Image (cartoon, rainbow, N blue to C red; front, side, top):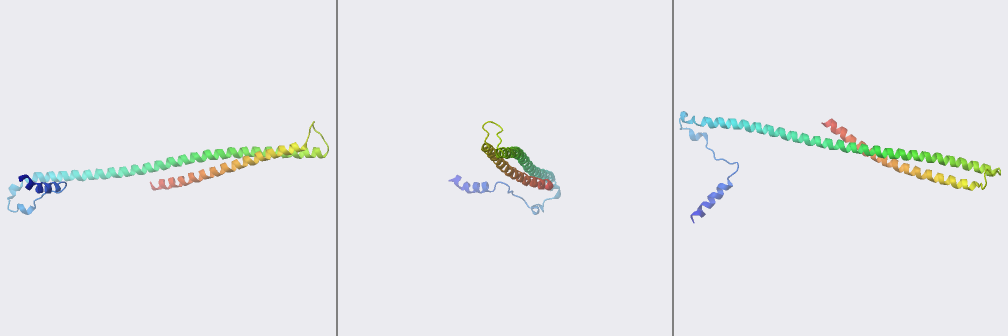
Length: 187
């Protein structure tokens, strides 16, 4: 039963742990001679010294937090720069693909124009009753011209599709570049 009476006191003491501290006010020592209070000077100096160390620790901690925040911003900037570089690379790749397809389309257009010219020549020859070779038939030149025209139109559609992909990639790059430029100015 004796142990039970101490339980509330122990719980109270456990609940008061942490940063709370019992203190004595200065008025307690009003009747103590100054010579006897000299023993407290060492502990007062220790308090002042440790308070200075605490202030220095707070300052260093604050600097560390600022360094961490700056590093986080630097990381965000670096990530944005990397995404911008990747977007530019993607744009350049899609642009190169578009220009390749545009070149192919132009070559197919030249072939279609040549086929059209050969068709006109074949029509003229047929109209004049000429037979430039055995089995000559102007209709074969029409089929040839239609095949070359179809190849040109298909190449042109592929080039147009590649141009749209390039424009989309360019837009994405320019958007990121704008954000990077703004972030660069804010640094």
